[in-house]
Length: 88
Image 1 (cartoon, rainbow, N blue to C red):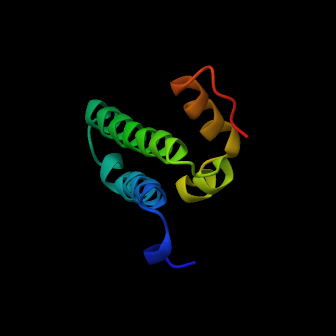
Image 2 (cartoon, rainbow, N blue to C red):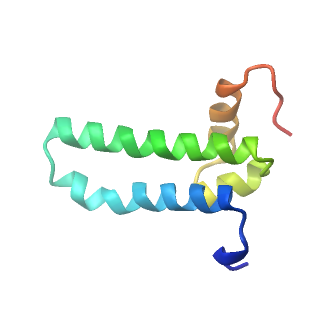
């Protein structure tokens, strides 16, 4: 399936995952503090995109695929946002 046909929430997850991956080489050259801050910011962006995609009704498995994460991580991130909700 082409990215053009994906819902915007899935595209946002893919872009956040790509930014995290693409940042790797640059972060390796940064100071320890800058590396930690940069990595934390990109992970936070990915987490927010994952939560938004789940709220938009995207399946956990599709989100995990797009985010390049395991399903358990997606479940934990989305459950932490809405503890009363079960993730099918």
